[in-house]
Amino acid sequence: MTPATRMGLSIGVATGLYGLSFGALGVAAGLSIAQTCALSLLMFTGGSQFALVGVISGGGTWPSAITAASLLGVRNAVYGVQLNELLRPRGSGRLLMAHLTIDESTATAVSQDEPADQRRGFWVAGLAVFVFWNLATFIGALAGESLGDPKAWGLDGAAVAAFLGLLWPRLRGRSAFEVAALCAGATLVATPFVPPGIPIILAGAIAVLVSWLRHRRDVATARVTA
Amino acid sequence: MSTWIGIGIACLVAYVTKLLGYLVPETVLDSPPIRTGSAAATVGLLTALVVANTFASGQQLVLDARILALLAAAVALTLRMPFIGVVVVGALAAALARMAGMA
Image 1 (cartoon, rainbow over the protein chains, first blue to last red):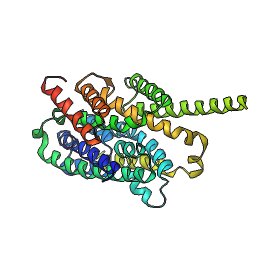
Image 2 (cartoon, rainbow over the protein chains, first blue to last red):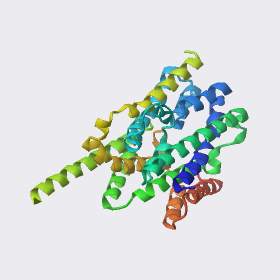
Image 3 (cartoon, each protein chain N blue to C red):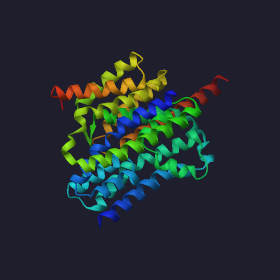
Image 4 (cartoon, chains in turn green, cyan):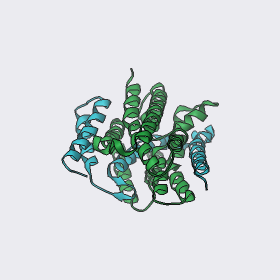
């Protein structure tokens, strides 16, 4: 197994198990088992699914539940641009890639150096999360709340560790550290003021802006020196 | 709105959102801002995912067992543990912290 494959599989198992919690919450919110499973199969973006079920279980209307879920999903469009730039997919394969475009598959792909590993990382992580997330949703919906809280097993800690593990090798050089520090600060500052999911887009935008300004400064310096 | 219609609309919006990025033409992908920004965007997005998954609970910032998962994972990475080991260490740290009574 290549490192990209191992990363994709481990992140798939760790994240997929969280589906147990989603399945139980979906049924607790008043959805049927089929409706809960349909969300995992067809929406397949965890944050949005939790938001939708959270609004419904809190007595919210469907329009507000759809809005909350859709806002949380906006970052997937940004991921799509990045994966499109990186992997240059063509034809109808893009339709399936789009469905598997989530935090985990994007993070695994972009953290690889070689194009073949980036592609492998995307597909292994995307498919592994898809399989485990849907299986776990079904089991969680059947079992209801008798399974207990997956937080007690530290599954949210596994997600934190996985994302840090993907970021770690990227933190080479001063400019990467600066971008990381700036984006960490921006995420913390933005979190209380905007809906969940939006701080991640803001951080991405800030990173692109900083690198573009740097690029222009470097070009200008080169011109002056020349 | 019936539940199934609500689910259908929400899933359709989610899918179209995901598809949008793949419809951006190559000429735009090859433009200088996108090309120079791509590596930085990777660092920015991964950093934001780490920070959001560690400190955010909805729109609130909280300090709970996840901070120990972050620290334990950083130690594991410094010791050059393989990726799966880092993930397990993170889960263990959070689980142990919760067993000890942390939120």
